[in-house]
Image (tube, rainbow, N blue to C red):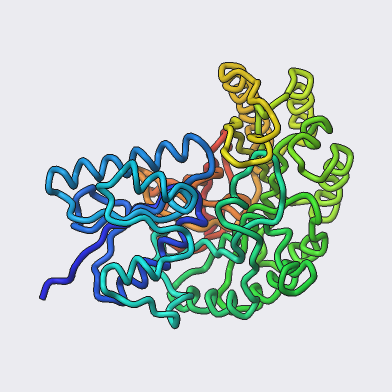
Length: 433
C-alpha cells in the first residue's frame, strides 16, 4: 500500500524547527512519508508550525495558513493542521476566523495532533527527529520557556516559565544525532544563561557544555541566545578549554542606554553591559560576539538611539542583527506604554544601525584575511563550495566561498583553509593541502 504523506512547513526560529523535526519523526514512525518546506501541494495533509513572536512573523504565519486554505478549496490539499506559537497564543480567535483549518494545536500538545489522525505518540522517540538541516549540523534545544520579564516580549506568555531539560536527556539526544552523522551543534534556548537554575538550582550551562564536548564525534558546539543578566562566567573557561566549543557567543543585548534598558526591564545597566563585554573579550580574546538590538521601543528618544549607535561603534560586534519594536498584546509594554515612536522613525533607525554594522562587519572580517581556519562545507552553489568557520552560524552569519575548480571537497567535511579575501558578508578561502 502507498504510504500516506504529510507536508511540514516550519516558520520562525530554529527552536520551532526542532519541534517540527521531532514531530516529523513521530509521523515517520507512524508510517507517513514526510516532506518539509517543499512544493505547496506535495501531500494531502499539511502541518504548519507557526511563529507568534512579532507582528511580521505573525503576519507571515497567517498568510501561509490562508494560502493553504486556498489550495484546500481548489482540492489540492485535503487537511490542514496548525501548531506552534501563534496557535498557542490565539487558538480561540484562529478557530473562529479560519474554520477551513482542520485543527489548531499549541507548542506542547503534539500528541493530540497524532491522535486526531488515529496515531499514537511514541515517547521512546522523544529525542529522535528527521533533520531538515544538512545532515552534518543540527540545532540542539536545551530548554523551553523564559523567566525574564522584558517589557516587549511575549515569549513567556506563549511558552510559560523556564524549563531546563536534564543534562542526561540532552546527552542522549546528542549521542543519537552523532550516530546519525551530525558533527556540529547550535546550542539554543530562549535564554542559555538561565539553564539549570530551575531544576539544578545553579547555573549549569558550563557543566552541560563540558559534558557535551566530551561526547566522541562532537566537532563543534556553538552557543546561541545567552542573556546578559546572571551570565554564567564559567562558560568562558569552557570555551577556552575545549577545542570543540567554538569561539562564538550569541548574547542578546537589545539596547545600551540606561533609560531604555530600564524601560525594557532588562535588569542590567550600560556600565554593567560594558564590563560584561570587556570580561568576555579579556577571557576569550578570539571570541566572535553576535548580538541582537532593538530600535523603536516606546519612549526611545533620539538621544537613546545615538547612544546605541555610539555603543555599536565602540564595541564593534563581529556579528549583529536588529529589529524594530512591535507592540505585542499582553506584554508589559502593551499594558504600560504607548507605542509612540513613528513607524518611519523606527525604519530610519533600523536602516542607520544596519548600515553602521555593515562597515563594522567589513572591518572585522578583514582581520581574518591571511588566517588559517578550520572550515566546514555546507553545500555547493554555482562555481563555489560554501562553508563556514567556527565564527559563523548557519543562515545568519558570514559564509566562506571556495572555488570548485581548486579541487573536490565533500559536503559535511572539515578542511583547513586560508582566508584570502573578505567582504561584509562573505569570506573567500583556499584549501591548504
